[in-house]
Length: 473
Image 1 (tube, rainbow, N blue to C red):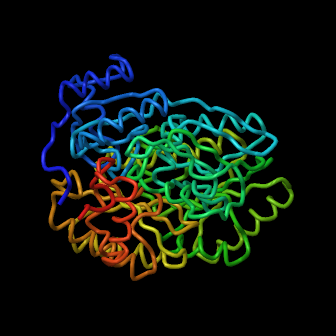
Image 2: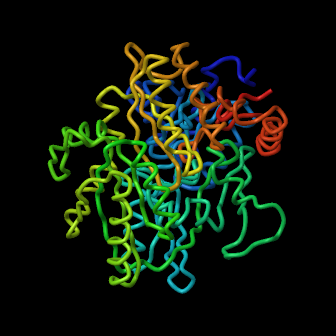
């Protein structure tokens, strides 16, 4: 059972206290605001908070959390609202804290290849800012043009570049965090190596806002690669495309991106954006988008040519080379808008499975078989290079994965398959609200109880994003 048995616990006295802290302009209780902040990009779900507060700094967040902790008021932290697991849904009502005003890049340290930023900075804005200095922050989720760095921290986001460069956790050096009690701490140090006690920084990364609210972030950077080449390769079957992805790595190549898009998803996004740049033929089942980058153009040309030759063994069609920056941008635009397009087409439920790369063909076969068995349609796309398959689901009469018993049964079967293949149920979207009922597939009671105990140490009154990842007991 949750620690909270009722909603609407924010009283008039609390409202006056919040206004004193942040100003009346940043305390919202009107119907429009509550509806706007009551949903994110997770399926068709809406939960209204009692109030939305937009603090401007860590001290204001601290003061708000002290009040909420004392009064046992549920608090939901929120970034840009682009999440896909319900992590920012205020399903217990209470206070929703938006970090959108914490939107400054505080320092770009070119000497040490680091950047210090607030959590409300849009990911692409940060990437562009460091790029001007010849530096590179690789994690690039598809929503990078709208998602916040803080949300990326909460979910340990990845994106296409993760296959070569790693995910968010590989770049976080230090975090300023406001704990549920209101205390403000730094979790580590601005260094590349740190073996000083437990790693609180990495514990925060991927904790989905359940342990604290991040208010400042120190990220490591790397030099920006000078060149990149991009190809689009059609395949006659999804399985062959997945087999080809694994073969590229076994042959000794490490692409900077290796993305899979099923043909139906590509057709949907092509129609939405009015783009005909990608050739679509009747015998094509999927495309791979393959990118290589580095500082030696001759080496990259040799690699991309060798990869193209290798793919002929897997029933690949004619390779399409993106000849200039505009063509590359068009291809990436199509890939990054796939999720938006298929959602608008009725594929409202997205799963975020990840398996060892060589098991992708078996996962694809399983998805299609389960779709027939449990009466849902599925389109697949995602990061084939690291085994992270996004599965978008459409089921007649079903807008979300919570209210359809047959679909819940089908998802349990899917996640059981993922577990048998050596994978897990979320690669980069997190567990949040909608996936927590499946955590028992991945973990036994011992592991779950350890997580609950960690949560209790940080949040003894269970006020912060309670009921996400797992239910408290």
